[in-house]
Image (cartoon, rainbow, N blue to C red; front, side):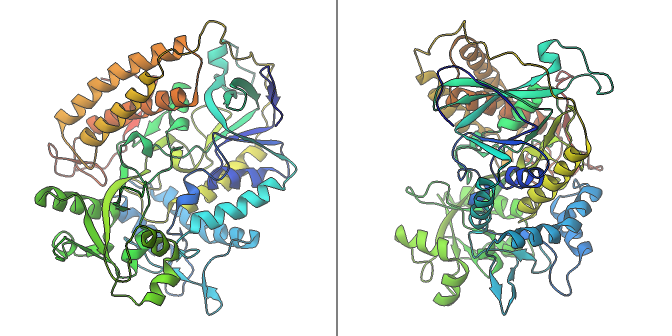
Length: 539
């Protein structure tokens, strides 16, 4: 894109916000028939998908079955996974893997067949992977195809500001298309500091999760809940936001920000130990290290608090060096850089916010409550993950719903939107105290970690709610009076997502899956999703 001194109005058939696996898959499915714009707020390689180490869950082996994969997912989801959505994803998983193989993704093989590993919560080996860097291998391949596809235009370093809807513009509904409708979006171009207007009859949010709402996370800096926040502001329901998955094993080291130790290390025999070498998982769950992530994360949290520890240890050193280098080359190399030889010593690990199991409420075609707006990937609630995500079900969810949403868009005709107004910043000025943003950002992430983490109480949630209300007032005042920046937009979205997480947690009077409350330690008799509607004020 060439730099301009004036905002530009762009027109496409489909806008896709996000350049992870969900967004790029949708773009490639739509490119044969539609003019597609892919917007990403940093570079193409900077989203969460490239960080995924483990792999893609798909039934491949003899003796495995769709029913078994469905059952494992339902068990991990603690009664809240939707059976129809779960079966939809599971039965379309193998074709998604076939599609990636056809594109040239270099999956690990053994004796001429896909090598399948096993991860916590799975009853069989069904994890297709590319050593321990599956996400990076998939992303590299897809980015190569996207950059060579004529009908796809890439807008890097473009941050989503907000969606443009008929209601926001005071426009009447079009005949036969219902009431409100998504017409496009505004995006901040960081190369020019201008807010451009993007118009399209179809928009897809593939913006990922919200891990950066917490102080410690395995997510990249881009995971700020942008899609969830803008969809909520546009009138879409969000569901199950209380279920934030904390990955049990993030590398604990001052120079290793957000480095994940994949689930597959435990799947291949890794044992969790206290500093004195005592193994503790069998005392917490009969599945020991292969228990689902929520169980393992809570067990580690319990042991750390009980013994006053900064971390626990994950030991794979009983496996031969060649095995470790073949299966976990990136983890081995990164730890060695930090002075940890995992073939001889255990890895220091702590839990960290990892995956947003709830999100924008969608159907099996990726449709949201707003006509013209689809959402796919981690930004969504599809019904698959329930109260806890089964390991390696996330990448396949991205692909299955990317194809489903693309098929729905191809089959749905919306007229092109009318000319949309340019972004109006004529009454704002440059911020004179940017420190307000950085201070609020830090405060939000710290109290979310302290009050809305792995174990919750009513009092902690009340404290978080009060602080969120104060922050929202400050941030809205800042947003109304000063030019927008990426930091301000991300903070605005994060504090909105934080409110949704806390509201959802306060409304769940039980402990289920990833939501554990000391005030409500038991399961409720009936498993129900937490659905928040922006049209219905909170109690």
